[in-house]
Image (tube, rainbow, N blue to C red; front, side, top):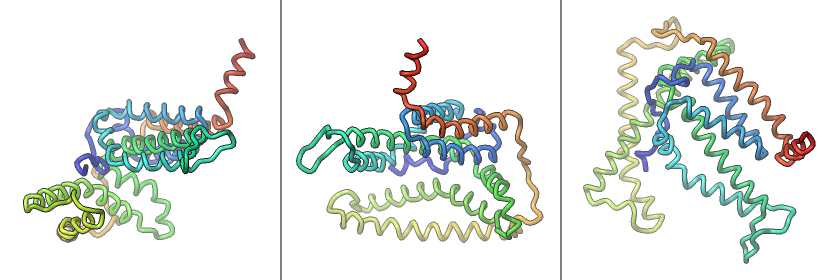
Length: 281
């Protein structure tokens, strides 16, 4: 399961999203989150899903890789959908009323909407940031977007560096965890049988070496940064200067208009569109 985690991994490419300025992608990500979370009707959800499909299409990332990013979250997605299915009440007659199980039409709608919303959030944020933006570009973008906070003495550079290092070491720690699990299994360790308490106790031989390895890597990274005379962002220059082009501004403007329009789309229903078409034709 850990091999399927793609968060924090960068896949090189030359797609539209790969060539988009990382600062613009951060702003688009914020608008995208608003777009998906605000969509509350079927029509608005359809618009957000189509925009997600558009982002996937222009990212150049293979569908197989995107499905791997969803696989570790299948349990969370199913659990969230079931919670909305069984605990959402409605004004109409229940579709299923058997013992303690009661399912309303509104519950099915809520479960489907929540499932689609979570899938869109995972896929959209993955193709916008982690899969199409290198850690170095992401660090520079975060520092540039948050640069106004320097006026109130917020250590923006250090904050961006910490986030970049955290994202960079997620795949490394996952790989280290897989090695530890393989080593423990070679010593006849059992992680699958027994009750829940026994399985939790079986994780101790994994967590302790992983914690020691993480601390050791952190110390090695700190020593390497000190040897290279790293003392923060003051006076530092950029090897690659970020520069947005007209294509990036058009992309950002399109997303902004779509995000603003979703508030108006929420007030439009499919039944209203059908009635309007009948009146016209």
